[in-house]
Length: 64
Image: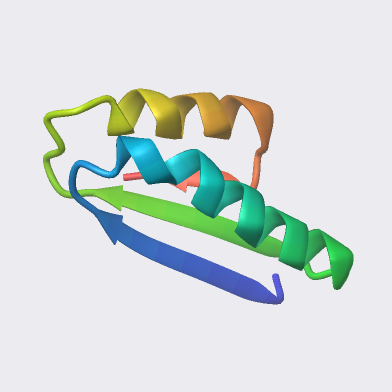
């Protein structure tokens, strides 16, 4: 593993996909082995569902 990106969040459903896309693009273009760990601090929006969707599409994505 080259890089672990840890992102705490609360009610960030609107920005998660864009943030993930940007991080994944940078990591892949530089050929880094990486993981993205989203830490949901009790969101009341759709944040957790988006994290689960991202995780199902990319094994480098984890949610806590």
